[in-house]
Amino acid sequence: MRLQDKVEESYLPLRRVVGPHHNSIHVPLFPGYVFCKCPSSVLPSLFMVPGVLSAIVGESIGGIPEQEIINLRRIVTAGVHSEIDQTCTKFADAGNLIVWEALPITGN
Image (cartoon, rainbow, N blue to C red; front, side):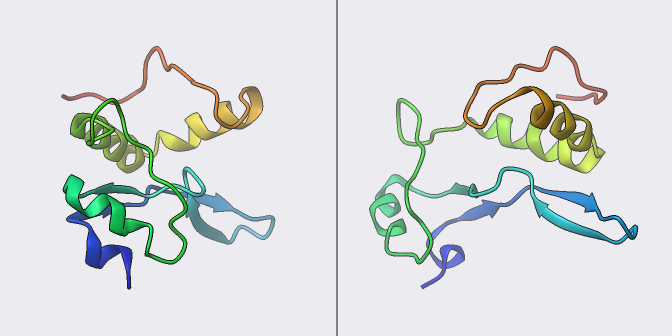
C-alpha cells in the first residue's frame, strides 16, 4: 500500500543542500511532512500506509488552502526556500509559526 495509491495528489517540497565537497543532495524542506490532496472519505485509510503517523487538518477537512500550496510551489521553484531555510534554522524552533513579511517572488 502506497500513499500515491490513496491520494489524488501529493507534494514533497525539496531543498538542495551542498556538502563540504560541493556535492549536493535534495532533502525535504519540511522533514516528516508530505502535502496530500484527497477526499475526506480517504483520510481514515491513510493511516494504513506505512510511515503515516498522523494527519494535520484545519477546521474542516481540507486543512491547507490550495492557494497556500501553490505559493509554496512558487517559493520552491524560485529557489527562495534556501533563504527562508537559513532564517528558520537560525532563529526558530521546530513547530513555531514564522511569518514572512516579503519574499522576492511575484504573482498570484
